[in-house]
Length: 300
Ligand code: 5GP
Image (tube, rainbow, N blue to C red):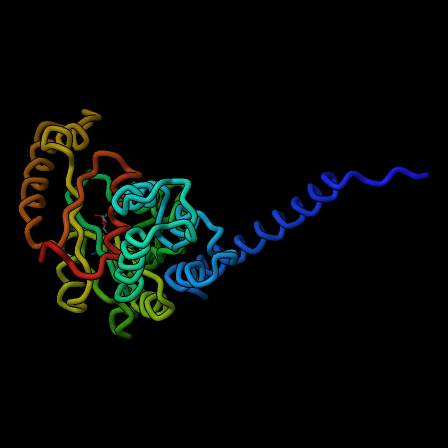
């Protein structure tokens, strides 16, 4: 008589298959949210309607992490704000928590259209580092690539860091109305923001980040009043001084000139809708990305 398989063994295999299928179903939900073919609110509501659904089986943390532009630090903070534990599944939330999560998602998704965010601030505050961090870590954000008449520095790639053009091409862009704004920066070269890629990105629902100088920020404000202007601040004046003259390679007169410029630049901060302090690059980047999803400017 051939031995019959142990029933518990059969159960284990069946349970294993069911677990794989459930994981795949949850992955499909996460993917739909990440690619914006479905909202997180819709997924949460499906989980509350059907307790045996893939949505109900998802952890709230997984649901939130799938939302474009929401990084792990922000998710952890949101869970704490909503008083939902890290392990909690969507279907396991109590009524109070469901209401809180519902309101949070509705506020985020319901009236959070894509935004144009302008990042400006004094020289040497770290604007470039923060925007590179966003480019590398938040692929959903469209980072505008400016046109400039200056020559590429070693390692800079045409079309990635800038579109390097000559004066005649820059003139043509201005005449054709292709630039949202342009300015002569540091009394030398011209820099401008190409408009068509911004319109395309916003139409696709992607938020756009411009990292430009103060004159450019003011011009964007005039051309697109709905843009959000973010001013990046150094942790302290002393820290900015350290970053500006830290290398000590400039003459005392040049150092003095740079400090004077920084003072004038810092004085512009009250023209801005938001201020972000650059204590730490990843933290500052997260704050800038969060501002793209905030439904209404709270410092205006
Ligand atoms: P860099 O030559 O060091 O890359 O940039 C010099 C300055 O030009 C930076 O302050 C940067 O914010 C600014 N800048 C870069 N692109 C643009 C732009 O399209 N428009 C304006 N107005 N300023 C820009």
